Image 1 (cartoon, helix red, strand yellow):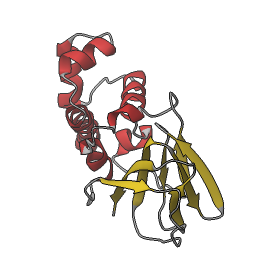
Image 2: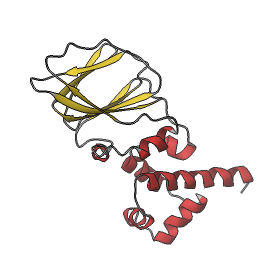
Image 3: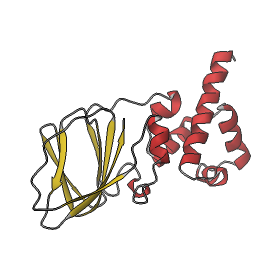
Image 4: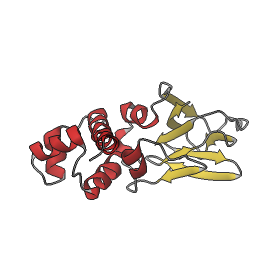
Length: 187
């Protein structure tokens, strides 16, 4: 193996380790999920050698990162938005406790402190805004209408959306009772 290949494989192992640790999963827990011994899993993290693509795919799905990012360390560009519905796709249940180490790992950029927003049904819709980075909204209670560009997305409790906030966007209450959501922005 050339030095470049060894370094690339070692980098994959480091990304596996960083992602696992950021999400508070032990080596033993990850090894059990992948049906390998803890020693085998440790060797994968230490060297990146002989890691099955199925193991990387499993980790990417479990922790909600792009497989390409886990392999290359380069985040896929989010051009529009990605809606996560309850029980589908990414494990949104990680976010009610406002843990965002995994988002910090994902972006490796400045992460704003999670902001809790309450929207009242009597509020006037805010003007659409733009900013750099990526934004994550997670609805805790009620219904939130997220406008992104020319689309209105209706999100209920436990629904979430990732989007590119360079597209004009805003949020408003979508029901008769106040709505609460968490927003996290990577700049």
